[in-house]
Length: 218
Image 1 (cartoon, rainbow, N blue to C red):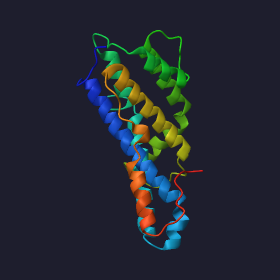
Image 2 (cartoon, rainbow, N blue to C red; image 1 turned 45 degrees about the horizontal axis):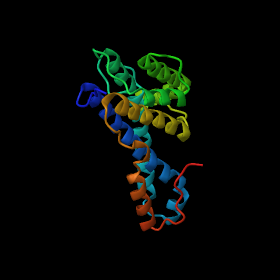
Image 3 (cartoon, rainbow, N blue to C red; image 1 turned 60 degrees about the horizontal axis):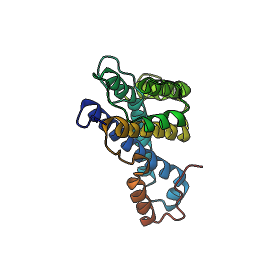
Image 4 (tube, rainbow, N blue to C red; image 1 turned 45 degrees about the vertical axis):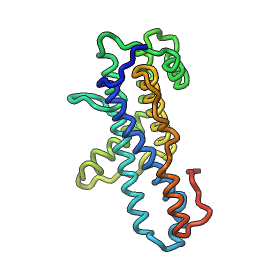
């Protein structure tokens, strides 16, 4: 397979991976503080600090999710759609290692009978984004009206669940891996399981006296 290593598609996909990596770490920090909040408060050590960190993490999570699922309009973006657009514009059409793409489309419930694998990838993404359109709009509203800007008298009642955040992360991580292995021609970073920040933060909580540390949302 003639890969795209070093191409603009490779560069975009790497930037996509960086956003995904930061999202995973921010979600882990947010989660650990949330599920251990009562124990952190009981220790009376840095309660206000941890509350502040958790607030900042949710803002970072919202921004990252919006980056991942944003459409390209005027400028080229390192979003999922941005990578798809670059793949579709590539001439000659990129060589595809078919099995990984077919597995991804099948796992995500995309159009398995579509013989044009680029079209199958696009349709799979469109289907997934439509499924979570309401949630993505809520993230975008929070970003536009409260986080990136501060509109007068705007209140965000609530964001989508942590489970939704994880589903959006996992789709993006799997998409990055497919592009890396099937188009770029190199093994992807294991973004799904890169959890060093979570591990280090757990050790820190233990150091300050938090016991029976919970690690996952229930």
